[in-house]
Image 1: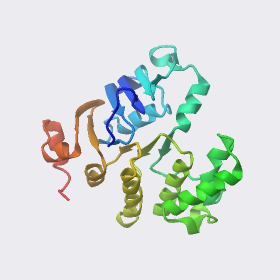
Image 2: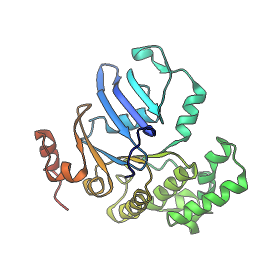
Image 3: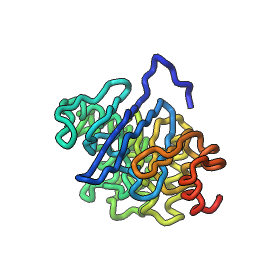
Image 4: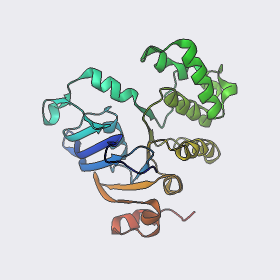
Length: 262
């Protein structure tokens, strides 16, 4: 990871974030910082708040308190607690276009070809020239290994190919960070490895990524920092060698005991 500079704010910074769904407290005071070039893996049992934290970072979910900053710029809010909402729609649009999300279920548009899926947001949301976007989209499809599927429909692709198309779509926005929410959990092991190879290549390029995953091998091998969430709080965090090799908390030790060493 490139050395963080005092003059360069983190791409994403979250301070004391709280999020609840009714009476259920899902995030209970979470702090997270992602500097340029960092790959952060979020691990933890189901219900620990991992995906909710990712969705709050991308402003797909409204949090009740705490700060979210993008490249040093704080999100502006109106209201408090359950009525808190972002107050500046243009700011939210700008932040979201710089934080591309890759979902578990691909979310490709069935009525568009793979190339059209990858091109849609830069053309429709950002208003970029179609010819310029098409050249970039084809390059990203080549990058993820499915250039030959540009004119295919999503239903004609395997799950691994669809997820790689979703990654190409995220890349085509040329975001400052990529957010992955369980990108391989809907895939069988063989197709999963296709996607892991793409994510590994992106990590090696120095892209900023936050990765929610149940795949402990991927978290250990690809992240520069791993965060273990438990009951809406960060139980332990640090370099992956430290967390996986010498976990300090009893809860993390118990969690990792369910996964066989690679």
